[in-house]
Image (tube, rainbow, N blue to C red; front, top):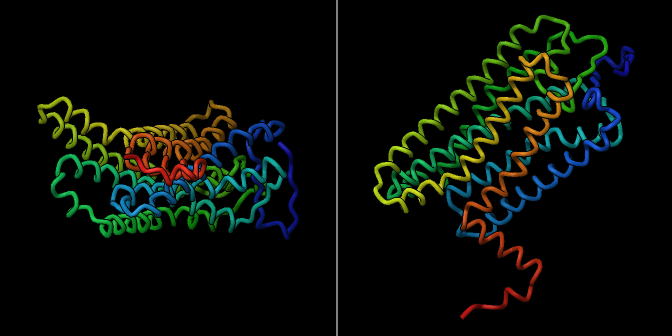
Length: 323
């Protein structure tokens, strides 16, 4: 690894190395990373645009999709511009305050993302188990309040992470072997006692994921029980189809995220560059695939997106009205 010598004026500067051991391949690695990032931005901004323009989509389910799209955009944007500046221009320096700020926003938005997935599971439960009361139980105002509650939870749970590291002494090199200021990577760079920081980070990872997965599991347990009581196989299929997109999103987010966290903390035999690549892909692939999954599986959104695509590529076709 390249050595960096700091003067007194550099005491607040950290160095992000990118992907350790693969520095020579940074340009090549940036191609799929930037492709995933751009596709994620295009897909999520498309969801926001279409839902915003179409009055018929101003419903709780689509408001949740917009929240999911916003967290996907914010999560990937919180680290990808800096990662690409490392890959393309070798701009590796970042201030300590900038590093801790990036860490806070990155983890806070990820936590809010998890809360939105829980709310979406509740939305599917109400839609299947209490369809007649859906409009009264889940209003747009109530969904907005649940989103605000998720944001408050994220801030309260994640704020101690950078605060616990603020007073820590950092090693002279101040080199972070990562593409962004992940909590675990910054924590490992400290030369002081990080027992409390490690314990808090690990507890929060399991508390947040464990609590959210428990609520999601409870929702789907009640959904399965309600579906099994339906005698019609067609009704079975229709009910389960409404959950397919959400289940796919859950499998992507939680399985990859939990695997990445566990390997980073306990997989000491795994090469460092594997940890870093997994960590990056964990926050690039779901934002790219979520709009595709929901666009394909949600017929109403799918039709509206196609309508706008047709307007772009065949402007005259919008004047045609079928008999």
